[in-house]
Image 1: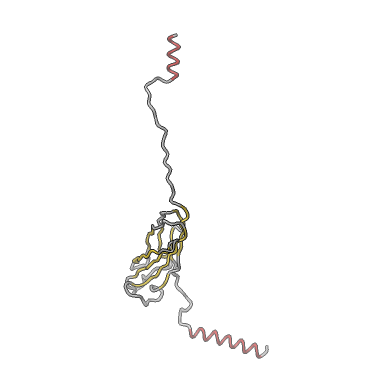
Image 2: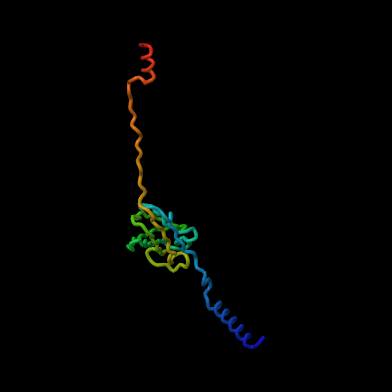
Amino acid sequence: MNSRRIILGAAAAAFMVTGLVAAPAGAGVTAPADMIATPNTGPVGQNVVISNASNSPCGGQEGDGPAQVDLIIVRPDTTEDNLTVLTDDATGDWSIGYINTDLLGVYTVEGYCGDQPNPSVHANATDFFYTDATFEITADEPTTTTTTAAPTTSSTAAPAAAVAATAAFTG
């Protein structure tokens, strides 16, 4: 082994050790921050439920104050709807129904988890942005077809077979 390889190997090892010592505990490990939009496709007028994924509550840890999620829903025409959702204090779970789905196209949901009314300093429990969620409105509102039954008629006239039988006896 030549001296150049030894020096490069030692430099790489020193760089890795320095990175490990300088990095704070847990650095590089990010808690999930997932949102779900269900269903993720549907017709105009579809009610979409937006919620945290089971691995991504907002708050819900000991010492957290009341938490809330601020949502921005970017509609296909780039207009925005702003919503605020309070979380369950014990679990940090949240959900909201969204029905302003009158445009065809992709809707993008952006979310921020924070303490109410002041920003938090809690790592991983609050004070983070959710990964965007999307859903798509793909068709016009379904049409309802109405079927009408054939009209029923009633008659007091005797059936044709009875008329023919009566004619045979009078003959």
